[in-house]
Image (tube, rainbow, N blue to C red):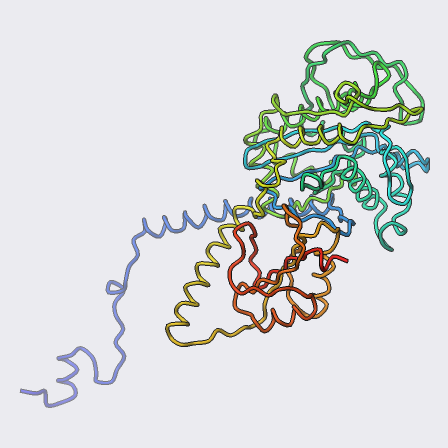
Length: 500
C-alpha cells in the first residue's frame, strides 16, 4: 500500500522528496591516522633530502662560474670523459704588479685520467725546453703562456680574456711538443692556478702529508716582493700547510729544475691523497668556501657543470691509489739524446715520443690505433642503444602498415677523419648557419679517410642529398659502422677530399 500524503512519505523515507541528503560524518571515507602520519613523514623525508641536493647543485654552479674559462682553440677537442681525458696543469706566477714576469708559467704538467679504471699518470715538462711557439717562433716553452697572455687579439679574437688566450696557446704548444696527435689523443682541458690559489687549496684540504727524501736548503728562494729568503726542509714524513707546500714545490736552488719537477709531482700525489681522505662534513665546508678559495686564482676549461665530468672525477678518486700514480719526467736521466744551448734544452723528438707513449700507457690509455674505438660515455651508449631499438621497431611497424616515414628536421653531426685541424667544426658551423640542427663535431681516430661519406641513419634521404650538394660525398643509407657512435640523424665523415 503506497503512502497517501506527503507527510506519510516523509515519515517513511526520512526526507521530503526532492530534498538534499547529507550523510553523517560516520559514513565518510576515513584515512587511518597512522597512514596519514606515515605519508606526511615521507613528504618531510623527501623535502629534507631534496633541499641539500638543490643547495649542492646551486653551489656547484657558483663554483663552476667562478673558475670557468673558455677554450679559445679553433679545433678544441670534444672528449668523452669516461673514456679518458688529458688536462694541462699550468702554475702561473701571477703577482698582478705590472711586472712582465707576472705572466710567466712556472709549472707545466700533463695529467692523464682514465675514469673507468682509476688510472692516473703525470708528465712534467721542463720550463727551459725550447719549442716552436705560434706567432713567436723558437722560444722556451714557458713563454707560450706569456705570449698568449700578451697577444690575445692577435692570436685568437677581439674581446677575449688574456688568461684564456695564455691557456689556449700553452695547450697548443705542449700538445705539439709531446706529439699527442701521433697517438690520436689531445690536450682536452687546461687548469691554470696561481701561487695564492694553490696555497689556499692546500689549506682548504687541511694540508698535505709527504715524505721529504733528503734535506733541502735553498738560500735564494724568491719572495713576492722580488727579494730572496732562506728555506729549509728536513728529511722524513712531514705535514705541510699551503704556504709550506708551495715553497716545497717551487724551490730549486738546492738541486735543479729537475729536482723541482719531482717535488711538484710528489705534491700533486699528496693532494690527490688528501682529497680521498676528506669526510662528508669537510666536503660541505670546502664546497661552501670554494668561491673564496678559487677567487680568480684557479681557472679551468673543464665543463664542471656537466654531471658526467663530476661523476668521472668522483669515480676516479674512488679507485685511484695515490701511492701508485705513475709519474714521467723529461729530464737528462730519462732522455738518451738532448742538447744544451745556453739555458735552453733541446730534446730529441723520438725520445719525447717514447716518453709520451710510456706516460699514456702507464695510465691505462692505449697507444695502438687499432684498439682505439670511437665510443661515447656509458650514458650516451645506453641512450643510443635505446634510440636504435625504438627506431628499428617503429620503422618495422610502419612498413607493416604501409606507412612512409616523414623526414622531419634532421639533426646532423660532423666528424673529421682527415687529420686536418678544424675541418669538422668549420663544416658544422657552415651547416648551422643554414638552419640545420648540428651536434658537437668531433674527430675520428684510426686510419685517415680519403673520401667523405654522408650516412643517412634515420631515413632523411632528401636532406642527406641536399647536404651532399654542399659537401660533396657519397650518401649511404642505413646504420653507422660499429666504431662510430652518434645520436644524429645524419652523420658526415669528412675525408681528405674536403679538407682543403
